[in-house]
Image (cartoon, rainbow, N blue to C red; front, side, top):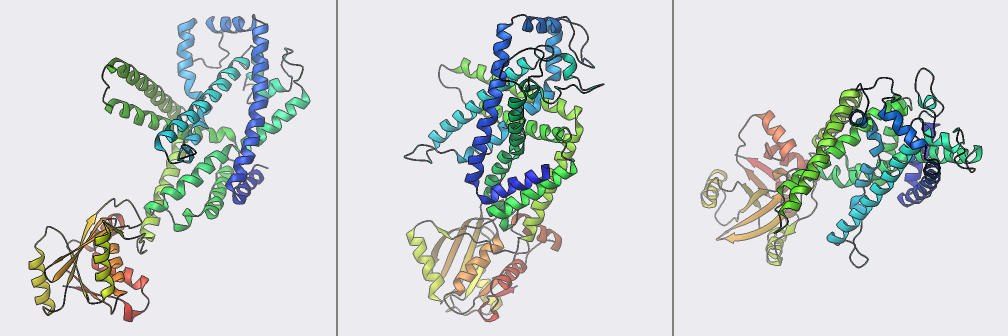
Amino acid sequence: MTMFLLVMLGAMFLKGYGEVVGLATVLVIAFLGLSFIVVVAGLVYLVGHPSLLPHWIGEITSGRYHLEHAPLAGSGPLVALGISLLVFPKLALGLSGFETGVLHIHLVKGTDADPNDAAARVANTRKLLLVAALIMSFFLIGSSLVTGTDTLIPADELRLEPVKGKAMDRALAYLAHGESPYPICPLFGRAFGTAYDVSTILILWFAGASAMGGLLNMVPRYLPRYGMAPEWAGAYRPLVIAFTVINLLVTLAFRADVSAQGGAYATGVLVLMTSACIASFIHEMRRSPEPHHGLALQAQRAGFGLITLVFVYTTIANIMERPDGIIIASIFIVCVMAISFTSRAWRSDELRLKEFRFADDAERMLWTDIVHEGAFRVLVPHRPGSRSLADKEAEIRRKHRIPENVPIVFLEVHYGDVSEFQNAPIISARQEGSRFVIVAKDVVSVSHTIAQVAMEMTKGGAPLDIIFGWSKGGSLKLALDYVLFGQGDIPNRVVDLLDKAITDVSRRPTVIVG
């Protein structure tokens, strides 16, 4: 049944993202509406019967915690507070869902007049996160009160051992079915309970939709951009199929056991939120205080620091208690990194030109003249700072017997962010006497830029000659430098790129090394 529901979820995403959002909205409203009735009815009953909560508090302060193995011995408010802090990491799954909302932040719009207004997008994002936090806080605190041990649910019904109680893992459903010994609400019973069960099953079915939706929005934006995934990962439908298959494999591996998956899921949630806390705390510490607001900033920093410490403690405690979570998460991380490196290496021979950019129109016009005039048949890559262009030109003409009347174009390449995969160099050009110099800035790969420029220059006439000097370093080092950083054994890489891009040998530039 679980596998069938996952396939149906994938089919919904294949039908369209809008359809998934529409169905998710209906399911969330139904589930939260029914849960709201259960929680509010329970709270109203507790208020109307004031002896229940004091009895519950009295049980706690007297040391009757209804725990198989209490982490602290003794009784009293301080001991109860200490036990609460030690048990708190077990509630980490209560935070789940909040982190998937963060994945959709980039979809938040600004104003109707300007959807890309950054200030409005930040303000609307804060509203989104605040509303989500308020809704989660209400249901977490409210459900904790109405399902507290020995309030509306007898302690024996919440035990896991020796006999699993009727309310274990389904406390709100227990109340919705009217199984509580207290007449909480006349609406509760078999019909209402069945409706609540159906809504719970459907919302659990769609629980992965938010995470899957976030991944479908995030993966195409980043992994293909850095060459860490195949090009098809930027397409919607193939990515849906891939994630659906992964969902099925994970579910099969865990035998659809929620408890078995809980450790890995809680670890992922906590690591993500702890990382966000640490980043926010560092940002606050670096922020300069405004005039007359130094004390307020110190208090804010202290608050951020305290929250960060709580999450760090919770994460460490959760990992120590359930190490299987960090093991499974680490396996996934290693797999993702292995696939990413393999993809980057596999795609390293792609031409991967996004566009040529120009500093201004004058640079574009000079570039156009050089490329399309067809009079320039010699291209010499030049490393800036090594020696003067005049000396290099004299050596090139002497070694390769190039007459003075044959113009030479030098190409200087300057790196940008080499983590990017698609190349979009900023081109500028200048003339120095009889020679022309093309400068490519913000490039991600030297070899790709040289091949791309050579191919553009070939469009204007006969194939040109690309003259290289010798590369220094071992062959293995040069190969690794090429795969990882786009530099290294440049001449051979340019040959490979040109061979793959231009099948007609008569139109292919000639690479000369010496």
